[in-house]
Image (cartoon, rainbow, N blue to C red; front, top):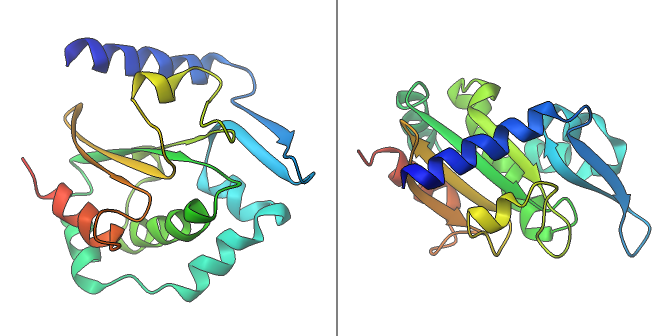
Length: 169
């Protein structure tokens, strides 16, 4: 586990060393696709990703979920693997950020990694973390993985599943 954490930290550091932390490439339908380290602001500001703001505007996070996130905002962080081309990501990720915003989460607690259609990123992080589907939201507490929610989650209620993970010690 310590080795995995060290590898994750080193790969994360590699993202910050790169002058440009992401690439913009054309998808097979000539739409834009990000690959690499991105952030919520990038998705909000790019007109090619208007699905992000649209989904955030219609979603109202559940109060118990927001309360759980707010109660744990100083002790957890997230690694989020997303496909900007992926419909599941279009649904889950804007809603995830709505929850974080409502709970007062610091954006520094979220590492957002965009992958291509083969689910690869620039620094091989998806292989190291054994990510096979997107979106994958990994919850960390004190550097240790508490768990992950893949796509919509096992129950289809990704938000409630994430809230349950936050309360694990």
